[in-house]
Figure 1 (cartoon, helix red, strand yellow):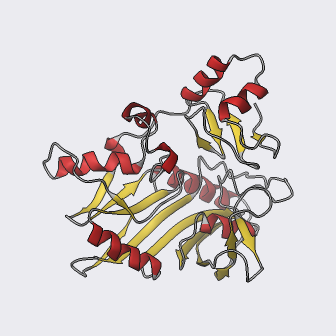
Figure 2 (cartoon, helix red, strand yellow):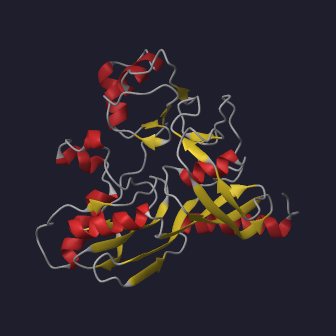
Figure 3 (cartoon, rainbow, N blue to C red):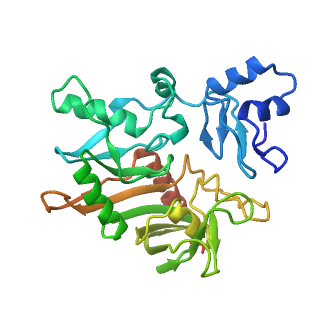
Length: 323
């Protein structure tokens, strides 16, 4: 089934109701089973909640086959652990934290789609030789579901406040690699972000009285035939900032299923063959909130994105370089 964009008339309806309308031959039970079988996506992200209500502009997609099973704790790699903070490598395809509306879900329901916030505590407990998981982790940073890379959690109120101040002051080092079509020269992107650009998606505005300031420093890491691998440093940390900024320049991140859409409804084609959003949080650095030690980590590209780059490099060697 082709992706369906929710209209203002359908806004407020549940995912099950939307699919029931699109699949009139299916019963309510069958529709719910499709959702629970990991075959429904909203805005490119898997949704297992038949009662999830949609907003205008959100895209519903029904998969031909169930999505892969969720990551388990074995997929979580801890890079740093002490009594105040934990730094982990986040795989693509997993949310950093659970949506507030999902926090009251049963443990069984949460296990169907675990978050990094869910998977990290048992790994921490095993490394520390404990049977119980201890207090919940405190969220100070988020990565998009399909973005891979380094994430830090606080373990105490003191650490949460200390890290929060650094993020607020924009002193945390955050560098990403993003693959985009075309050629993007080094630059500083200063474009204000708004929650709704007119089609229900986040976007940019030139109105100085609207939205929030957002700044991204972009440098060229590698130039390929028809593509650029960009090194992006965040000066601010707005939701989807890199994705929105690059899309606003006319160069959406390869594999992006949301910001490939233009406000007029057109969709920019993506010929990269990216297996998922080609965005990776490569570098993370901050001052320890208690010891004041300068800490820094980097994480290599995961195999799926490295394979994508190897293929594009091979194409570059065989063909002409294009802007």
